Image 1 (cartoon, rainbow, N blue to C red):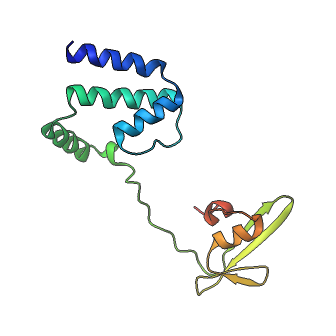
Image 2: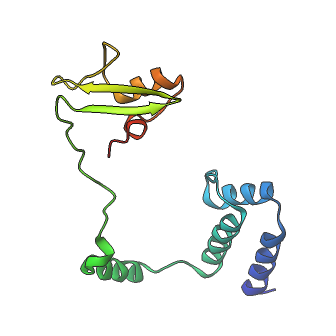
Length: 144
């Protein structure tokens, strides 16, 4: 049996495997648990890794050439994933309606936030206080 036949057999097994079997195979191939994903995506990622193992991935020269092409293409580099954090100006007021009640937070010059007469070090602490569960404070108050 040659490489292609073995790979075809592995790919056929992949297409009929249960979710649990796919998650186990993913961990076996990648060395870590898969994050929450749909079955179709999981099957594709496993198939890619199997093909890479049997036929090899990109060569170092190909990877280098692709990086050069991307570096010189302005459309390939629109988002770097890193954005500068905006400084929130003192006196700024954030409002959020939550379960029929409006909540307001005021930013102080020392970088703390005031809610209901009490100062907090973060918007997340205030969001936790309001909701009773953990929230990202910037998301809760719509700060971008």
